[in-house]
Image (tube, rainbow, N blue to C red):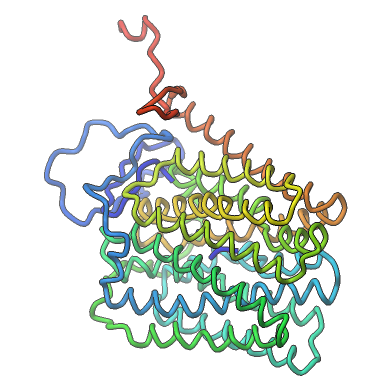
Length: 485
C-alpha cells in the first residue's frame, strides 16, 4: 500500500556502528555527517539496542521546516495532487474487481500483481536508481503511471473493461514502481540538507496520508455517482502536477549525491551491505512481517465493508478515510519528533498488531470504524520510523539499493501475503483474517525485540515516571567475577 532502524535517528546524523563478523573489511561504515568532527571519536561504539542512539540531533526541527526549500516545496505540492489521484484509483480498482468477481481472493490477487514486480525486480530497480539521475528517472516513471491510468479509464468508461484488464494495469503500475519508489524516496536527500532529512521524510508520509483523507472520499462519491472510470481518469490527469513540479525545479539548488558507477556484483554488494548491519536488517525483517500479513487492508477492509457490515462502497471509503486521519497524525508527530528509536518501532508494531486483533472482534460498524484511527497512527509510526532511520544510516551511494530492498520487503511481501489472507478471509471470514494478520505482526515484533535486547545484553524494566508507567531497556548487571576481573 504505502507508498512508509537503529535506535535514535534524527536530522543531522552521525552513525556509529559496531562491526560484525559478516562485515567485509572493504565495506565502508554507514556515516553521513554534514560537518567535520570537532572532537575525538569515542573509543568504542555503543551496542545496538532498542534504546541506544544510532544518530543524534541537537534540537527538534520545525514541523514544516523543509517546506522553506523551494525545490522540496515543488516536489511536495506535486505529490499532494498525485497522491489524491493515486488513492482514488486504489479505491476504485479494489471495488471494480470486487464488483466484477464478487471475490476477496480476486482483490488480493490484484494487490499481489501490483506488488509482484517489486518482489521480483526490486533490487535491480535499486541498482538502476543508484546509477541514474533521480529527476529524469522520475519524469519517465510518473509519465508511465499516468498513461496506465488513462488507458484503464478509457476501457472502463467505454464499457469494455474486464477483470484481466485491471490485473494487467496493476502489474504495469507495479513495474513502474520498481524504479519510481526507490528513486522518489532517495531523491529527497537531493532536495534538502541532511539536517532537514528526517523532517522531509516525515512530511512526505504526512502528504501521502493527507491524500488518503481526500482520495477515498472523492472516490466513494465518484463510484456511487458516475462510476469507477472517472476515478481512473482523475488519477491519470493528476500526474500533471508532479511532472510540472519536477520540470520547474532549479537544478543548481539540488544537493549533489554520489552515484554508483557501473560495475559487476552491485546487487550482491547491496545485499551484503544490509545483512552486515543490524541497524538495517532487523527493521527490514520486522516490516516484512508487518507488510506481508498486517498491511493487506484492501483485502480486509473491502471484506468487512461488504460481507460483515454490508455497508458497500461508502463504508469501505469511510474505513480508509478514518485510517488516514490516524496515519496523518502519526506522520505529523514523527515530523515534530527529533529522534526515532528502535524501541518506538518495536512498541508501535506490537500495539498495531494488537489493535488489529481487537478490531476484528468489534460487533458494530461504527466501533470498527473508530479503530481505524489508532490503527493508522501506529501503522504510520512503524512506517516512518523505519524509513527515516534506514535512510539516515545508509551511505548515499548505496541508498537506492537499500531503499529498494526495504520497499521490496515492505511492499513486495504483498504478493505473498495478499492471496493468503484473501483465502483465509474467504474461507474463515474477515474477522479471522484480520486477527491472524495482527497476531503475526505483534508476535514478530515481540520476538525481534527480545533478540535485539539479547544482542545488546539488555533487560527490560518496568517502573513509574511522573505518575505514568515506563518501560525501558537497561544493561544487565555483570556477574561478580566478571566485574572483579
